[in-house]
Length: 185
Length: 190
Image (cartoon, rainbow over all chains, first blue to last red):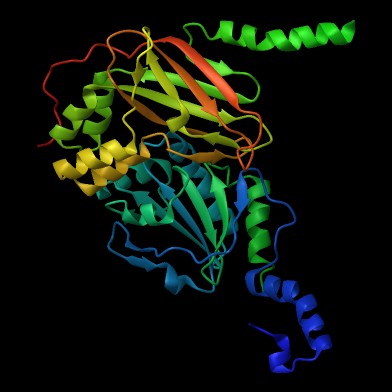
């Protein structure tokens, strides 16, 4: 059985470490927001499932290579009404934050590149999307429905999940995301 | 006296609510909002054809009774969306077995259906189990073998994280599938 006594750690050092842990965690992940905006669920910080896909131009993205960034992972499909309404708000959010510490990665679920190209050209022309051509990645992530957004922290862990479509360009959501990123250096 | 009147009115509320549901496809009691939208075979075929579904899949789907269903949790607690707890019955009381995700998974595997089509199909179905959070809504299709006449639905919802809260039961009477099953050849790809 694990025992602190085994390592001969002084009790005062353990107490100091426990007291400092939240601050250290916040420093490594950006400041935690005081309150969550509507529809945002805090997750338990388990490692994010694999996400390695190519976009319409065959550029590959691998979540493992995005360590050090917060990643906004958004699953969507063109036939999904809430996705259609949410996509312009995501584009505006990306413009307003304009912060390289946040990566916005859209993942289209099981549609053709033509469909994705046409849809984004109308709804959010500044955004690109990864193509989960057979839906296998979405199956691994098991979103509650479409659309679904996850926020993955700089250590590759699932921190937040957004229920359904959210007005990401509204102040409550922008402030939430800015709170995750912490002050710009 | 006022207290007794309050108790009587409270006891009668479910009756008023039940009466309001006769022949309707919408329910809202302040705790839960449920809408049912039966879809015609042509609507279903058009939707899946437009997403490149093979002809054989579309043919199989257009023969069924599709009901697009939306559910929104209006409470401050968890409400469980679990269609397996819902009962569809014909006018003479016979149970109609819903064609659930497991059924379709077997069908598509036997047909060797393309994986993207299987994925899209799954996403267009109502989840088999979802703990709807306060304010959360979810939508998707329920699929039944097409019954001959009218039918009813009793939808039961557990509440609370441990399903230990007061259950919510919603009854829809006089439901019908939309449109007759058509015999025209589907236009999907081979």
